Every structure is written in structure tokens, then in C-alpha cells.
Image 1 (tube, rainbow, N blue to C red):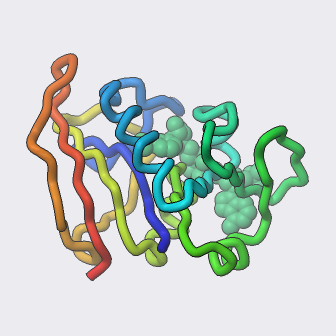
Image 2: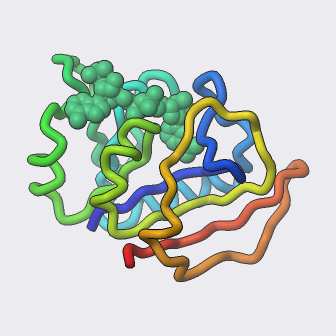
Length: 156
Ligand SMILES: NC(=O)c1ccc[n+]([C@@H]2O[C@H](COP(=O)([O-])OP(=O)(O)OC[C@H]3O[C@@H](n4cnc5c(N)ncnc54)[C@H](OP(=O)(O)O)[C@@H]3O)[C@@H](O)[C@H]2O)c1
């Protein structure tokens, strides 16, 4: 199964100037808990790895997608997205914008942390509510003035 896990603001924004520091700390725990499950295979784009994640995520099998020949300790760099996805039973796709857009049509489940408010982002997640149905939503929570909920969508 292909799963996306992402934090979105009210305009589907995922980052501003390469960062999304408004994300609640509770989301980090949620992200770790989820991505350690279902086999713990995480796939990310090259930019997300170098600009955001920076180190292999512990306890998970880390894959980075790039056209370049890169050697990153603790990470397997892959070049062929389709062949990779076909070779895995379960994959967590953790970003960024380019990789989310490329794989949204293939994703079975979306773990979306939906934030209220507009954080003036310059990178966005594609529109998903027509092709996915909401199957669960946590109660609304608030942290440092940011209201959010954890949502799970499944492909229609
Ligand atoms: N809000 C969130 O939940 C969240 C989560 C993750 C990331 N982010 C944000 O997302 C941003 C990064 O997104 P991004 O769109 O700029 O970059 P990205 O999707 O992380 O990485 C793009 C790179 O991935 C490689 N790539 C993509 N498709 C490929 C393919 N089919 N074959 C081979 N390589 C491929 C290319 O690397 P090469 O150029 O090396 O070929 C491409 O430049 C950051 O600002 C980060 O903070 C937000």
C-alpha cells in the first residue's frame, strides 16, 4: 500500500522558504509513530532529505529519490520510482511537493495533518478531496495557537 503523510495548512500549503516550523510538536510524534508502522519503509525526494530530514530516520528503511548518483550513509538512493513502488508492499511517501504530486494518483491512503490558518506557503500539496474520502478525523487540538487535526483519507 502506498501512503502519504503530510502536514497541510488551510490552503494545502506544505512549506514556506523550505520550512514548515509552525507544525505542532505533537505532529512529530504522530509522524514517527505512523511511519514506524506498516514495515517502516520511507521514501522522500532528494530536496526533502537534504533540506528538511537531513539524517536517516531511525528504525525505518530510508529511501531517497534522485536522478543523481549520490552516496548517503544509512540511505538507499533510488532512481526509478515506478520500479521501486512495484517492488515494495508498503511505502510511506513523506515529501516533498514534487514527489507528493507525482505519486498522489497512486496513493491508497493519505495521513493528513490539517492545520487551520494560512501560513503563506510557497509550496503546495495537490487537491485531494475529490479522489479521496475522509475515513477518520481526530478531535481538534490546539498547540501554540495552531489548531489542527489528524485526518485519514482513503482512495475512493
Ligand atoms: N509539510 C510537509 O508535511 C512536508 C513534508 C516533506 C517536505 N516538505 C517540504 O517540501 C519541500 C521540498 O519539496 P520539493 O518539491 O522542493 O522537493 P522534493 O519532492 O523533496 O524533491 C525533489 C527531487 O526529488 C527527485 N525526484 C523527484 N521525482 C523524481 C523521479 N521521478 N525520478 C528521480 N528523481 C526524482 C529530484 O532530485 P534530483 O534533483 O536530485 O534529481 C527532485 O529534484 C521542502 O520545503 C520541505 O520542507 C513539507
